[in-house]
Image (cartoon, rainbow over all chains, first blue to last red; front, side, top):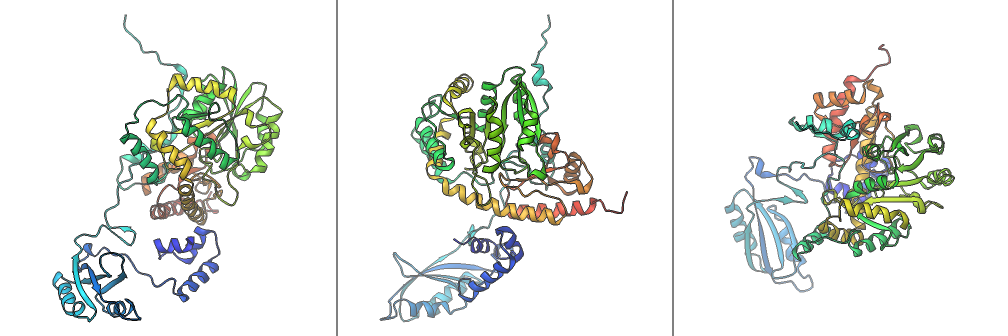
Length: 157
Length: 395
């Protein structure tokens, strides 16, 4: 993997200057490459990984397994594109295995999500069945551990 | 008659390692950010740990042969051939040791007789001098300088050689300076050594952690050097395996026969579990080493840049995982700098004097820490340096 992308993947807040120093490149080269990736749709956006548990925001997420009937000629794309447009939906993945689409949905309460599934998802034409799994605890998200840092137990030599 | 414990006077006269001193103070403080530790922050790669676990599950809890498992010696031979281009016979020229440290001890005790002089480039790791003293030898420091990129120069070497010189220690890549010896520098050293019957103990524990385009080169690859060199390396630094306590020594058969004899009486054999894990490291660990090296390299560049910006003149290290900036701009001694930095900013670094008198005016900063941790520590050091920077107008 490209070292610059890897660094951004871990911490998108590093400045072009810092990235240039860490990789031994020029700042201009770094900013041009990033601009290129943004233009080509390789970099899709930048966001913080937030542990909402530690804030006062009411925040519940669920993983919903959807079994759907694929549309002729369009396969799963048409239904996936419909689902991804809902604001409540954070992620949509086409899956191998026992079901077709994995949809991550967030809301303020368990009830919000249950209602969203009942009223919005289940009612879609191609949806055969749904199975909702609420997230009870997030330990790690987007590669970042959401626990207190472990103490450095190394000795000294 | 009352009994008086009579300790070996040579041992009693040795100072304890200077690295530890501040650590003991730091250990009692809250909120200390340390950049003092000389071991990887990575855990041993999982597939290597798994082989250790598997060996325990299978009940392989006995001794191994004195020299180490033959399979491990064979994989060390293949690794050394692949990475350094050196051939050693696993049957008679390779010994698995309890860390690189044991290999250094064995090497010195195998070669040094009372009165023999041992040349030790300094600043360097803390053990060469005391081990030489305990073997009855005379440590002769050779100062390496920032303006020479902390390399051993042929002239400095020539100046230090006497008829009593028995051993030259080659501690490169160097802890604490990060200095390395490239091929062209080793050639010059080899030329000087070739005219003598001095043996070389080449401590290449940081060999894998060399930065830039050129990989590490061993002095044993120089013409006529392999036959007089005890090459020491290990698993601790490159494979993040410090706690496993495993290293190795390679050398000419005649030397190794005696080294192995000493090891046989002193240690019997290296830890068995660690040896099984180490086979996996030698055979399938190259990718892990490269990934960790790339990470160290990023930190190295960042930390050097930060130190330079705050006005601490800093040789850009080419190996190991330390930077060794000059603190001249503060006018403090190494000890004073480290003590005040700890007291006022709660940052622990190691005084350069822990690595020899020539380390005065420097401190050792380790980058075996996450970037986040390093960034916080650098902010604090910057505060500190800004506060104590000598200005041109004063004095």
